[in-house]
Image 1 (spheres, rainbow, N blue to C red):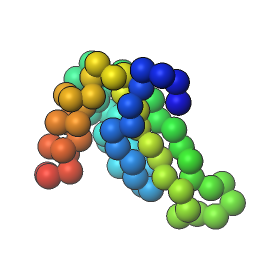
Image 2: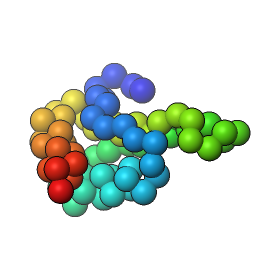
Image 3: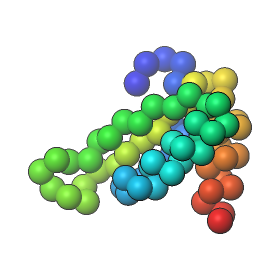
Image 4: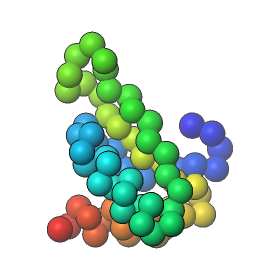
Length: 69
């Protein structure tokens, strides 16, 4: 990933990734998904979500709220 971006979340579930991306977008936080899952073997690998360094604190709060629901 390029400089200026920080990983704030990872999961092996596509639906979870989409939910978190949606929550970030609703809060005007630009985010990027990096899918590192294997295309050959289901269940191997992670989907990582990155936000700009300036948005890390608020993005982590949003993710924590989601995880605690």
